[in-house]
Amino acid sequence: MIRIQQLSKRYPSQGKGAEGMLALDHIDLHIAKGEIYGIIGHSGAGKSTLLRSMNLLESPTSGTVIVDDVELTTLSTAALQKQRSKIGMIFQHFNLLSSATVYDNIAFPLELVGTPKQAIKEKVDQLLALVGLEDHRNKYPAQLSGGQKQRVGIARALANDPKVLLCDEATSALDPQTTNSILDLLLKINKEFGITIALITHEMHVIQRICDRVAVIHGGRIVEEGNVVDVFLKP
Ligand code: ADP
Ligand code: ADP
Image (cartoon, rainbow, N blue to C red):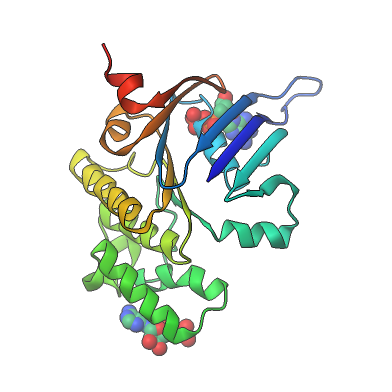
């Protein structure tokens, strides 16, 4: 579902003449359909750059990014927009519209693609039920707990029926109990809808709880990769 080949990213340098930061150094990665794939590493390792390359929020310096058999780096803006609708994303700080209700936050991506009003209502109702927020539809983000906000983020990310869900430190701002409930929800979404999940985290616990496979990234390179059991749990 996601294939990354020889992906490098060098950020522009600040000072004149200096070489920019090499954030990703010839990364190869394959994430199969239906997999939950974790990327773990310390701060500055390149996790965020790698994840954001999977929908070209970050454009690579060289290499290819193929999602659902389409090579993203060669697409026109319009074609990229269309391909991105197959890729949902959730964030550490949720990134909700603070002046919009829960309902309207979830409806927003449906409105963007011109979905008819009645279809939007049906879809948002389904999503509210899926994430357990039926009773909070008219609240604003500031009236919600962190876990509830992330449930809104997940519902919004799923609105256009993506094939892939990218999770950018999605539980890092949450307490352990809430983290587990969000991870269980991600597992449920993966099992029920077959959505492929790629997540980045600095927490081992997150990897061990839901991931099938894991890559350890350090200095912009994958230094270890494989089944979670093989990489972490063997003596
Ligand atoms: P992680 O998500 O693992 O913390 P990042 O992908 O955010 O790592 O960063 C990888 C490296 O790239 C770090 O050294 C970081 O300082 C650098 N970096 C990230 N974003 C930028 C940017 N916009 N401009 C310049 N350097 C950046
Ligand atoms: P507009 O997009 O014109 O501002 P609204 O956002 O008020 O209109 O609502 C558009 C439609 O979405 C309404 O007709 C209603 O059916 C549905 N809707 C809006 N908010 C809710 C809600 N909290 N619960 C259920 N349906 C809602």
